[in-house]
Amino acid sequence: MTTDSSGLDPELESVHDRLMALDPDGVRMGRVVRRTFDMLLDGQHTGRFRWQQLHKTEKTHCGTLIEINLQREFDFADGEILDYSIQDVEVDCKFSQKLADWMIPPEAVGRILLGLWASDQDGRWSAGLIRAGEERLTPRTNRDSKRTLSAHGKRSVRWLFKNAPLADNVLLRLPDEDIDAIFRSTSGQKRVNELFRRAQKRPISRNVVATVALQEDYMKRVRSNLGARTALHSEGIVIFGQYRNHVQAATDLGLPAPGPGEFVSVRLVRRQPHHGNAPSVDLDGQRWVVAMETDSPEPGPVLPQIGPLVR
Image (cartoon, rainbow, N blue to C red; front, side, top):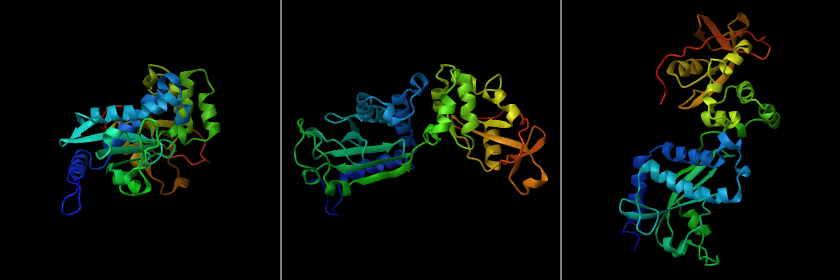
């Protein structure tokens, strides 16, 4: 028996409650998915940033990495038969490139499944629980006896998080002409400069910077000492980072707030009467606003570099 008198599955409910206690808003699971994709793409060394650029074997390996990284993040105990033991319940972890299209091995039949799906292109991910009972599975057709959820089984998934937003890979959101312009140069510094020039007003992760720089010292390409902040200063483009005073300035200007390990670039000009009531911020002793397309470029302010970090 897997259900009690109320029709609930006590083991599944126990695992559900534990996972929700560990990660009530899904931030940790979402971070695992993002980190796994970034590990597979290895942009810092390969320049890859699209799922389609992965080899077939790498895509197949994604599920294993998700399983390993979830265990590291949440410190799940090893299961005796399946991947994890959560609340003394055996749980198998599966990932699929299509929603709820998990491959279920014979040893997991009748047991609890933690299934995940994610799409970097769509910027979404999902995670759910189900007991993989016979009544929820397709017939045995696979050579190694692996099966998938039937239509009824897919409707029976207890979703922890469904279509939750995945931390964005800004390179997937830029037009092809911008991507071509960013990667055209053989200089890592020039590529990073072009990234911040063309991907303004969007959060840009360190991993994206590393992918564009293709260098071990990629953070050096952002800084003020001859990095992108120096190169773009004459154009009025500033790069906000995760310093609290940077985050506050970006927020005051109506921009996305850079989170841990993120940057937001934008072109600023000194406030003039034609800017009206546009949001402004005091930087470097003057009031600055986000530039309008008709505003001529002018050297931007020097951002404060001192202050606690957002974590």
